[in-house]
Length: 404
Image (cartoon, rainbow, N blue to C red; front, side, top):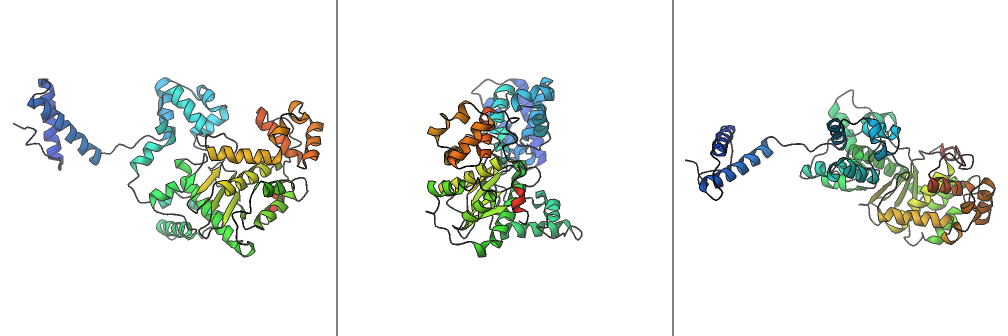
């Protein structure tokens, strides 16, 4: 008879089936608690479970797969998810993995549909792979990287050759390639599991372009950026050449400013980081070709360089269309807002109390800032993006950086 003293760790499939049959036999007997048979049943169950976890590991659900499963379970349609995501188009984008889940969405889904927040964030999937020190190089957006001219086309020779080129491209930028550090490098609401590889490719290109500018960049002094300097940048906004002048001014104090459009599948406005030699980098995607978005993103990232980026191990990615609970983002938002319009001035201004074209332009003249910035703030605070469309400067940014 098998007992707790004779049971051993399962090493073969034959042993597994023998223990499984013994468990079935003991279950049918319904042994009383505290008896030797009861303890044997408990021990064998643990040994079987341990063997199954090693032999047949269960992959935690993908966040989107978890949502789709719950929809099927409850008989929900896409329109039923609008209260969680905001609009029908956003539901479609989320379920097709074209847009990442945000913190408010995760919170709403967790409460409304009873899906674990850890599953929605992807923590369970990350935890199961924390000891996996390999990176799947094939998951990088190799075709788009080739199309943009970042890497040469090696796919004709072999898939492995292409992946070796990507590995070299990422490593040359100084980004960590050990798996745990690879995931830990990034922070921000723009990051999801499905975009980690794409964002690393984009960051490597940003660092590469920054180094190409290094001959024209002076050594950075970490005391160069303060409220007065940010205000100096902001006061360039009314000028017709303001965006280019602001970038040149920031570069003049040793901060590299890079323009690089985001890769497909990512929702990025900008990023703040530091190269391995200590050079701070501000990266802008210009995904929204509007003056209000440009000026807020630029000052937001400048605030991150001032307050939050202290080593090459830190990268902050920003999707400024969505709110976040990150304290660093809240501080950068506050600094950017106050550098344009002091808090004491905003609430009492005619533009805030009685928003119209004349009041917006008048406040812009008074504060020596572009009216697009004021119009953009009103659109953001009211959630009405159909107003003041003629004031936010559509098509007035990218033209300044066409050569980059």
